[in-house]
Amino acid sequence: MTRFARISGTGSCLPSLKLTNADMVDRLAAHGVDTSDEWIVERTGIRARHFVADGVYASDLAAHACRQALDAAGVAAGEIDLIIVATSTPDMVFPSTASILQRKLGITGCPAFDVQAVCSGFIYALTVADAMIRAGSARKTLVVGSEVFSRLLDFNDRTTCVLFGDGSGAVVLEASETPGILATDIHADGRHTGILCVPGHVSGGQILGDPLLKMDGQAVFKLAVGVLEDTARAVLAKAGKTEVDIDWLIPHQANIRIMSSTARKLKLPMDKVVVTVDQHGNTSAASIPLALDHAVRQGQVQKGDTVLLEGVGGGFTWGSVLLDF
Ligand code: UT7
Image 1 (cartoon, rainbow, N blue to C red):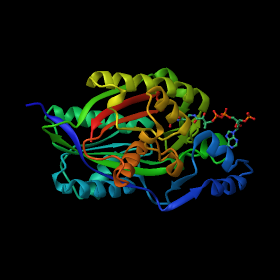
Image 2 (tube, rainbow, N blue to C red; image 1 turned 30 degrees about the horizontal axis):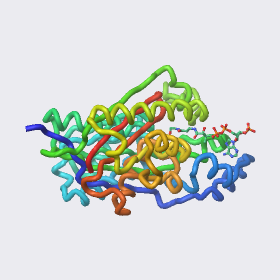
Image 3 (tube, rainbow, N blue to C red; image 1 turned 90 degrees about the vertical axis):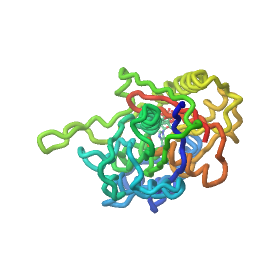
């Protein structure tokens, strides 16, 4: 009997502090930096983002998202036999945010580890969990994207600090006799590490190098639109499907112009694309599961729908997952 991996519940968490573009204009003005609601909306589609309070970590947001996903799936935390957290903003250098999350969920014993693929992290994590379930190494898993990118932002750099936000999304992914995940496709090209990075590191008790986010936005934009089309076509081909089979496209929420371009190339109308970038900004590895949970709770994505998830980001990394919800 073929064994598949299927999402049985979704959950998410956004910090309560919501900053509109007008709030960002004020915040940047305090740094002597000029921006505007018009520029941010026109170039990115972003209208608001959420930032965590001091003392709140990626694992806190993840724990909340996981409890919601477990409730939705009707699964008790103690039944979980694998936890994977995708994050580039871990609570600590080590242990993993997944281990800290495991403790916060009151679970012991199951494997728990982080995946670091920046904005493609959730796609990578889902791919690993799918493979482990199909191999028989796990049955009931939590796959999470959780980020506190506000901690990496340089508020003197208007080209990046208006783009990102904090949040978490989670799914319960379970072994199933029916699909489920139909195909996965992940890639990296390490020649492009420099176009999106946080180059600092910890050494001898000090941070060496710059610990704030750097991005060559135009270079990322150009690469993103190309690879997102390629990976969409690759994952559809692996599953023996075509664009017409897609009920919902849930792309990484970075820029509405990149999302529209992907939709256009796949001949999908925008009403088949889940858009949350306007309210969440770019939450990196959290953006896809956040958007998925939002779409499920809004009644957009329904049981049986075929959904294409797509991520792209630092590394350079990219990939997609095609699934029947
Ligand atoms: O999550 C990983 C994936 N990340 C992405 O997908 C991000 C991809 N890149 C992008 O989304 C876009 O490249 C950005 C939104 C980052 C930038 O948009 P753009 O259309 O590529 O703008 P640009 O960098 O070419 O800048 C155009 C102008 C510049 O002014 P000049 O040199 O033409 O006078 C910038 O200084 O816009 C200016 N600008 C701003 N103006 C007001 C840049 N940031 C701002 C700002 N407010 N916040």
